[in-house]
Structure formats: C-alpha cells, structure tokens
Length: 125
Image (cartoon, helix red, strand yellow):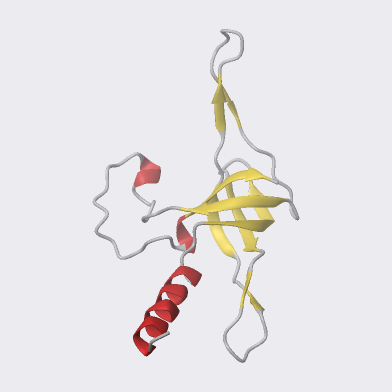
C-alpha cells in the first residue's frame, strides 16, 4: 500500500469515526410534559495511547411521540414514558434542527452536521 493510500484510508477512517448517525443511550432524566430528555451515550471513545472514555451526557434531547387514529376514532397523541436507566435509540439529524423543530424551512448552510446537539430519541430498546 502506498503512503498516499494509507494517508487517505486513515483520513477516511477518522472522518467516519466522528460521524454521528445513531447510538444507544441511557436515559438520565426525562420531562414528560416537555418531551425532552437528558441522555448518556453508551458508546465510548478511545484516542491512541489512551484508555476508553465515556462521552458527555446530552441535554434537551427531543423525544418523538406518535399520533394514531384507532378504528376511526379521534386522533390521539401517544407520549412515551421514559424512566432513568431505560436504553433508547438516539439518531443525529443531518443538519441543525433548531428551526425545523418550530416547523420552519431552513437553509442548511450551517456547519453543524450530524452533531450530538441535534439528537432525537426515536424509541426504547
């Protein structure tokens, strides 16, 4: 393998190791009325020559709810019940979700991509 190939393989690996897509997390706290949680990522990180370390908790993570109409009834919202120590799946949105959470169209010009601050809880394991 050439030095250039090794360089680009290492660079690609580094980029992918820092790309957040989805991750199991432990619920630390949950506000059911606001549907936001504080979660602890369960994956650890390791730098060369260092011991593995935990990732920092993530605050104010929105929790998705479901809307259902059962047997032709009125539409009802079903809000999840999360308890501390529940294991959930958090997904990390492609771009910043601050304005999208308000229902606004956004121009994705932000440099924030796949950031832990754009996590959304989609379910419980």
